[in-house]
Amino acid sequence: MRTAVFWPLCGVLLGAWAGVLGAESAPVHQPLADKIIVLDPGHAVKNAAGKIINPGASGRHGVLERDVNLDVADKLIPLLEAQGAKMYSTRTHGNAWRYSPQSRHADNRARAIFANTMRADAYVRLHCDWNRSKKFKGFTTYYYRWGSRRLAKSIDRALAMALPGHVDRGLHRRTFVSVTASMPTVLLELGVLSNRQEGKDLGNDAYQTRLAQAISAGLVDYFERTPKHKAPQVSVSTSSTL
Ligand SMILES: [Zn+2]
Image 1 (tube, rainbow, N blue to C red):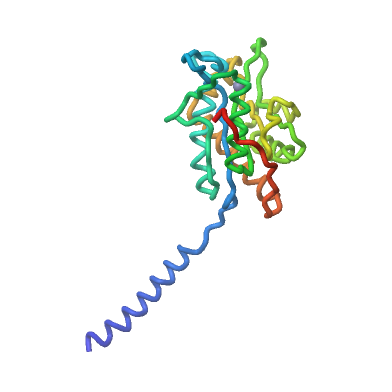
Image 2 (image 1 turned 90 degrees about the vertical axis):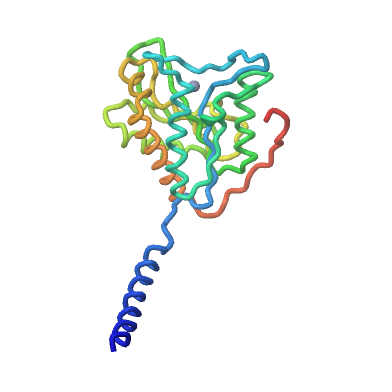
């Protein structure tokens, strides 16, 4: 008698449990599923002799641009991976320096070729500004190819929302972003190291997290507004420098 009651009850419980499991394993919306994103934390290049040929800017309190760029990339990668993106970076903490036998320009070109080779859907270059004027401050979003403007706009808007009270220096079209990269590409100047407040902020862990969250939100916004089909890639040479 006891068994007869127990088993049907067990069946009900198992059914309920399976229902819960089913609900839990329902597909999660991943807005960046199948997207390939390449990050380029700027600077940190040595030549073959080990001499630094591209150090990046130095801020107050010993904050170095090359470190800030890398720290923000480090915080951004897991955020984007959690939303389904496949991530690559031109520098990582395990591999913080790049070596170029030629010049920093050749290295920047090699980084763009890396993004092309990975068939990236977006290439995001991370930098911090420096200016002679101590009053100069704010974040700036640069793009070059017209196809990159929408990406620039989405990220700029997300940064403005995440950083109230900071100066939004807007969108600018410049060739230095990259003439080589064949996908939507932006170069972000995340703030100004020479400014007293921003120089301090940029070295701050919580501020870097806010920057990473904003860039992540901007990328999601961009891809959610982009038609699903993958844009055709320009074929490029993947030669030499990498
Ligand atoms: Zn820079």
